[in-house]
Length: 316
Length: 151
Image (cartoon, rainbow over all chains, first blue to last red; front, top):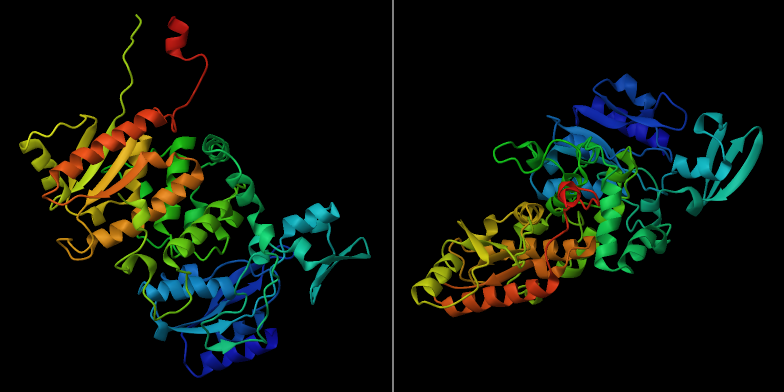
């Protein structure tokens, strides 16, 4: 897959079909990758595809001018389609290099299973639905379901639906739907006050670094309501009330554009389970309006469309 | 000093200029009696109501938020209330999941000729909120705050 990506990327640059190639290269730390944006065809040999390509690159498209050849996974492709629906990105300006995703490996899960820091691991190898972790010269085997990100366990569309070049054979979901839902199910069993108390506790940890917003491909407002001062919607200091308000309103604002890619949760430095919010919003939107994010670039986006009769039961 | 006043719900109402605000006006001019618990903010269209307003209302301590606009199909701007419906529906569902009592977020369709309906809606919402109780969602409950200590 990597070889195909490199040759395709080189061809795109050489033929002048794109101005940039946007993909992943190895990061400075073990088992990490970092986004690679280049116009130089000699750089394409640094491109990689492995189970650690976590970033959702669709985020940066709104800031790039010119034609871009972009590497996307299933979830990223849906963010990208949603940006196309909102006219934030022109379809003609992107060449989509689709990666059929087999699920990404969550290093913190590996660390927990092995009981070692990531620096102490010698190698992590993915073969089919098994993952081999080499530590102290010993090879240990884990099923992918144990080490993949929660979002990947619940993923519905690992293969991009919208692409120009698909870099491999389509993959099927890991299909452990329940795993990603545990937190939500636990919450739903509780009474409203307990749920509120839960979120109150979670958001009292929030330091309002806005990493969740900055990493979110659906958050493309030039100016976010949290930074407005006239009127001032939220206090700039981190108190749980405004932290919670910010996150709730952010989730409502990105409803129908959030593809549940889980980047907010991954970026969160204090580990607030934000996917319990995004996933629920994804379900609410699906249930009320039969809408799924980023399925078809020719469909209107959620908030630009309406049906004559819908959701009437909620309004008196 | 002991201050004992009975709690009465406070509601912030976002009423669309073309229908609901006129409906509320009609309720007034035709001398309909309805609870004085609602504070009205006139908006150009119910589609203008950002879910942020709802949250901010609750954050400021209002016990309930009422968003009201024209009946579906009657929007002065053709589609504003349909958009409001989508937004309010997800806001209501989502906040319910977060743990906000669903009674606190209300949406209604009131036309300019429905003074009665406006009065009835406010009465009903107020009634429900009285049962739900005061909004303590964003309150910091500390055992030894100033008022406690001064007693």
